[in-house]
Length: 416
Image (cartoon, helix red, strand yellow):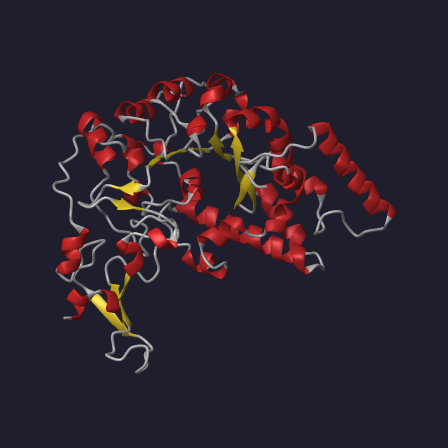
């Protein structure tokens, strides 16, 4: 069983007793360490007690790197790499950290590895009380959890890991208790997604949550699959006095509206959109705006509607302030633009009309990059043979502007 299907088997006290029993067994059996790796508990506790401070993490990493065990050294190196990324974003939120990410086969692996370093959360994970542990600055900082369960286990969770980011479901059923929880003051980013009808937010439910006096440290807010929310709900978020540091606001509905054709994102290979099928490497985020090199596109419909009413809203333009539409939460946390007076001075200024939506299909028919509209391409011949490619269609067109790779054999207009 896996989250969000919970399987609670122990109370907090029972989980603590189990940990003590494991420590005693390790002592009796003369094990070198209880966890799958050695650890200085004092250094770990400093990390947990000071989640915003890099110094305890550097000290922990240095200790791990000095151990004779390869597992410990790999964890120490991983922490160092994640701290380097955070420091780069702190200096410049547009920093190119791809050289570090490539070592870990991309951003997704960088945030999920190493699994063994989430050992302290193993009991909560095994009972599916939490899910999706995600690493920032070397430790698990983000988990998914039901809102009601969070209210129950928040203290325990915060005692085990330096949690600063949450993905919550089931908010409507406990919205008032959640809004009143002082534990939210520790959170820097929040995702309110939808797995079932129990998770559906309405404008009024969202408004009740936004009255919370404990949201002052939130820099990133994501609403995922919340189809019942209207423009009124979006406006309440970006104007909420309880969100003074909000620097990135995402609304994800599964459909991109920045082009003339609505593009549905779906990871099911049998249902992939046409444009995901003809791109050599579709964005792992499932968002066609997530190009290898940042581009500026027409805003999505909800953003256009919002800025027609309010003028310029900084937190809905990550492409401008963070260099990408799909932003690493670390960049927003390390460098919240809401604290930049120059950026916030533009808030409310008139926004030019974005004009008509470009057509992906028409661009492609004209031999242009469907994503960004560029006419500049490099062609790389593919490895072909007379049997699999009798007329020599194998190859890749690379857009020189956004870096998207297109299959040549799927682009007859370009081949002509």
